[in-house]
Amino acid sequence: MLEFTQHPQTLAQGLVLLFALVIGHSIADYPLQGDFLAIHKNRHVKHPAHSRDFPPTLWIHCLLAHSLIHAGFVWYITGNVLFGFIETVLHFIIDAVKCERLTSYHTDQFLHFGCKVLYVALIMTYGGSGSGVWERIQ
Image (cartoon, rainbow, N blue to C red; front, side):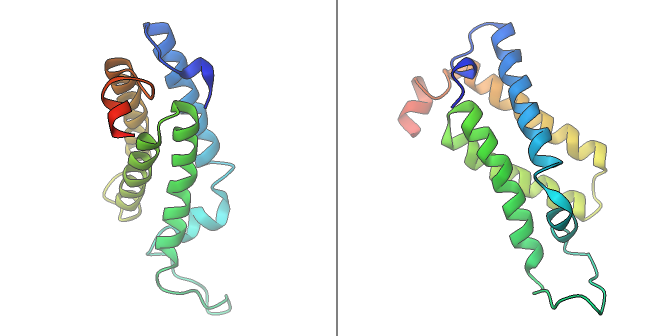
């Protein structure tokens, strides 16, 4: 948990939290995703005949692993396990929809950014990980 992201009360503090979440997203979506997860999280990828035998459900494991990497960043930055869980579910859904070609790359990134904005708004409204509604949930 990053102390400077906890309990933002001003717009500036909320923007610091948002900035930290966007940095975490960028790290998780690019260098930590890697080619293997980026390719195999899509259930429509056709594997070449000379490649290893991949199970037909490999995409689920890859997409879930990718989503959990994102969840780890959200949990660590916000200090709130509930937001980590929500990130797992939402990231999985958003990326699955992109892999189905129902959204574009830009829409995908916009939706991920919107999730981060929502987390900041909820933390600023309800007090984040240390008070109010979130304390009762955890």
